[in-house]
Length: 497
Image 1 (cartoon, rainbow, N blue to C red):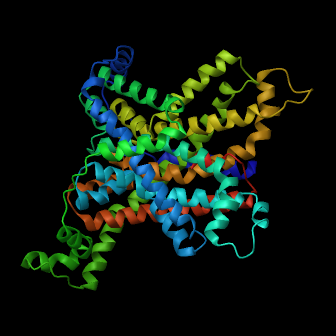
Image 2: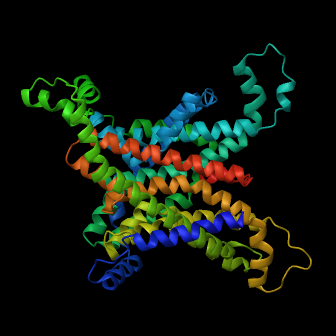
Image 3: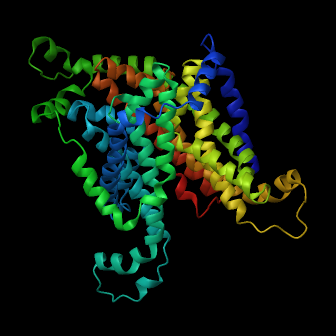
């Protein structure tokens, strides 16, 4: 297990040598000082001005999550079928921002686009996790049911009551993720808090940005106080009632999108020039078009995405194993661990896209901001999980007295298997994040997707998003095989999905 994990370190070091990690801004420290001053002097007056964006962040999350739950629950019953399993893997492998790009030409830049962008990948995630939860539940209650019991009744009376606690816990965790997704969608123009954050950072209005971030942190931190089971139905009704439902699309536009615009340009060229919108089948020209995309976008995008992911993976692991003691009572006092909890909550609550955007303002659009964002966000999630698990470990009577020895020889060896399981579960997530960070100017797959969107080349957009999904599915499969080979398992693993 240790030997396998150490293999990733030299791989990451090799990736560092070929990665673009230069600082291109002229005065990063001056910009950092201005950001720090904005953090200390937040302009809370903007919260009233941008109250609609805050409300939209909530309604997008509620609506998208609820639709994702419905879709995921239906898919759960068919998840044992290979086509359904592959379909779920495909839709969850595509980031919410990429889904928003796909829905833009269909429904326009409006709230429905954001809701669907959250709902579709979340349906795939819920289907996978719900199916795994049901598979792991105690089967003994099913033995008490008559043999002729219908499948739905067997589920409602024999499986759901046993699995309900885990399902509810994971769904509540996913709402926090949906809030982060909703906020990030604002960076591409949707009317959530991210839209005003992006504007504030771009115009160096750091006091406004700080106020919006504080409001977002407060929203996440207060979830346990106002998200009550009895009120969820009311929140859902209000969300669907408040969200604008104007959709700018027509059946003709949708038909044109699926039957014409997504096909490679050589197949559409003659019809476009003649105005007939007819399709041709020039196989040689289409092959040349694909090979050109392969050389100019697909291979460079995959190369940079993989490099960034591997560096981020090791950075995440190092950050997690170095910081989890700050929330463990085996190492520090209650006051210190509470401060540690707050620090980790702030870091993991801030979406990696926001962290990377902030770092880009400091250092410019290289891989350095993305590496830092991936390591901090994912490392904080893993550190929180490791710290929680470390607190459950009873120390031996002869446990080392010093903190360093207790860490190296008592705690870390006992949670290292769980650490690797958590880390490999985040691997596919980090690949998705690495791809999407290309929108910030980093040459991953997201950079080429964003460029194709700007040029309104939907054929290239669909091709590159498909490549991104297949790449993520490949990493997910590799991660599963490594975990299975090393017999890695942990009961808390689903909270990292």
